[in-house]
Each structure stands twice: as structure tokens, then as C-alpha cells.
Image 1: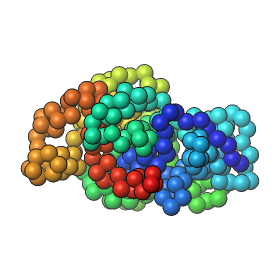
Image 2: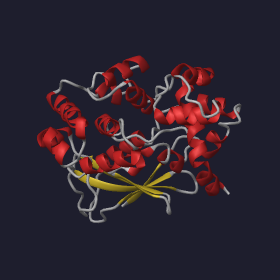
Image 3: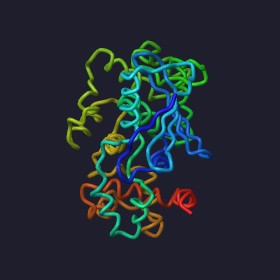
Image 4: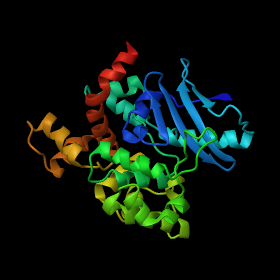
Length: 303
């Protein structure tokens, strides 16, 4: 089963997929050789594995990987909505793209269709992955995240699994997270987050419905144990609030190497460097760094 989805102006799938490390974590599966992104979704009808591929004319092709399944219109519409959420269709980048056009370091961003950041279908999944990525090398974080993902229910073809629900993680408990997933000190934080969502003590609805401004969004994430300032800022950035940078070791290394002769800059120096970009400051930093890291790969596709 296959259908197409219209995409926003200036959209390109590959730069969004490569915007940060989520594409390396299950239930995402990125096939760089074909430019196809696989994602497993949990709908009201079951576990569905889909493949996303951008067509030459710009629209997005969605393929249901379990050929024996048939989707009704309501389930198809739900999947379309999930895809729009994952690929951040709701973000209006016109202001950022206009700003990039006048800065040589960023002029490629609108040209290659970059600017949107890959998200998960739920705030819950984004938070767990962000907690797993705290105070650890990213390669190790991917291993932790993929172990948590093994708790999820399988799709019909078994190879793909959905991201586990808060109920599944809460039932597994902190010891399972510690022993099986090797989350270490993060184990009780992830277990408590799951339990709070199950009990209704924490409601991600306002984030998912885009009802909170930047400060409110950051306060929400800071209310979760295991999420500090840098991680709260990172999550806020994923949800469209770009006025504050998420400053971590990668930020110090990149900014120090490019702008301060290898010396470690202060947080104030980093903030001041991108302050002229105003409400887009975090995206300006993001793509200043990202274009340095993966521009050759994108440029090859445009040749």
C-alpha cells in the first residue's frame, strides 16, 4: 500500500533526517543508499512499519511495509499526521531562511531544504532519548536507546518494533532498565517519567498541541528528573523554540575550534556569538555546526 503526502515549501527529506542523531535510533531506520527512512508507528489498529521517500517532484511517498495490511482512511490520516509531526511540517522557516540568505556561513540552508529537525511521534519518546543521551558519548547513547526500544511490540513482520509505551516501561521498572538496558543512573529517571505519564501526574499534551511558549516549554522539561538545562533547551528546540542555545561539550568544541583558536569559550561568549540571529539563534548555531559536519554529503546529492 502506497500513497503521497504534500510537503511544505523548501522541504527536503535527507537534511531533516540528518539534522541530528535520532535517525540512528530505533524505531527509525535510515537507508542512506536509497534515501529512505523507515519508521515504526503504533496506531489504534496495530503496529505499522512505514517507509518514507521523497519523489523527484517534491512530494513524500509513504509505503506500508507489511503488504498484507490494509489501512482505512482514518488510520491513513493518523499516519499522515504522525509523519507531519516527525518531519516538523508545522514549523514556518521562512524567517530563518531569509536570514540565512544574508549570511555566507548559512546560505546553503534554504538551498538544500534544511532547517527542520527530526522529532519522534511523541514527546515521551523524545524525552527518553534525550535522557539517554545525557553525559555520554553519542555512540553509547544509541546503544542504550536501542535496548529500550526492544521492549516495544513487534510489527507483523517481526523485524520492526514500535517504541515502548510508558505503561510498558513503568511495568518493566528501574531494575530492568539498569540491568537489561544498562542505563545506569538514568534508570530511575526514565522509570519515574513513565510512571508519571501513566498516572497522569505529567501531561505532554500542551507540548504536542504547541500551546506553550519557549519559557513554559523549558520549565515543563526541567520538571522531569534527569533533564537539566542543556537537555531542556535541546527538547525546546525540537519543538520550535530557538531563542536559547543548548550548550554542551559539542558546542564548546565546535565554537572554540572555529571562532576562538581552539580555546574553550564561555557560555556568554557562545550566546553573544549567535545573539544577532535573535529568535533563530539556536538554529543558526545548529546549522553553523551541521554544515561543517555533513555538508559534503548533501553537496554530492545536489551535483
